[in-house]
Length: 203
Image (cartoon, rainbow, N blue to C red; front, side, top):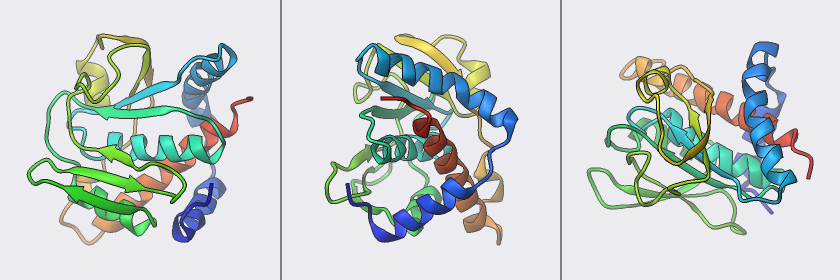
């Protein structure tokens, strides 16, 4: 698989980021889930869930898919929320800065197709509830990427595992001079942690 050159550079940056022992303990639960699926030769379905499915869960869906592909592991990467909004334009702008190629269909809550390699199908992303027909209805891990969704969705129908991997919301920096920097910082952190997770999987 040949990644786009700018994206490859950011992946190398992400791999160089330190991950604390505390975060590694959080990520180990996700590693264990994926490893069990690999060991049992079962399909790996990850649904990254955050309240509005607009920023952190979208970053996680994209980077989860890319990190798995980078390490030669086949997964289905989904995202969802408890409310429908849109894949936030600031987050879309951030992934473009990272070297992804992005096409867009529709308005309001557009569907985006995120390309990371000419050898791979694009990742289809848009804001939706976690049980949208675009997501698998059962046999998935619900990866909770924000505290609000984690605390307010005590039960996710169809999930066989519930794994909290929470991230700070870059929304706090919207319309400030640090906006782009903080979106990119959060994206790079998520990239780093997803790459770490899939680097630990033994095929």
